[in-house]
Image 1 (cartoon, rainbow, N blue to C red):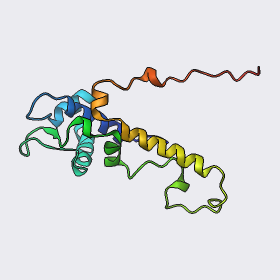
Image 2 (image 1 turned 180 degrees about the horizontal axis):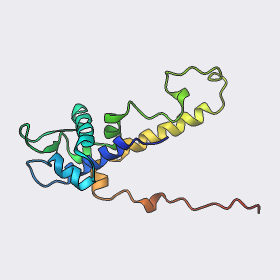
Image 3 (image 1 turned 120 degrees about the vertical axis):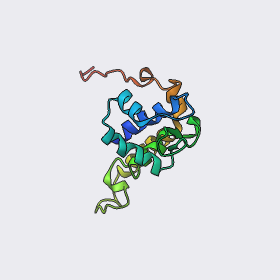
Image 4 (image 1 turned 180 degrees about the vertical axis):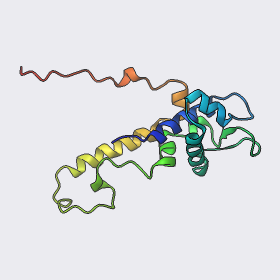
Length: 150
């Protein structure tokens, strides 16, 4: 599974907007500059976030962007859904794929469980968590295991 660049930049854009202290919102040119994105590429990100009702213009057309909900009410899953239809690790879980082995597949349950863990994790982390750095890389570093025999 690979998270799309649009989703990753969408999260970063949402953080820029959430962290803004200006009630007039954050201007697109400022987001583009702070995140080293082209305005043209950011247009697509902004449009998807607006369509998903995650952000809106603060006042009028020439105003900055603000969140439509509080940062603690917006999950990473909400942002991901602005860019992707869902999370699906393997094709056989999508519902749009036909596999001759699906009825007798011994691994389908494993993939389904892992898929649900990822979805639930995305749903459990909010913009507020990221803003307050409650999620740290050190929490997730997995020690290397030795491949040498005992």
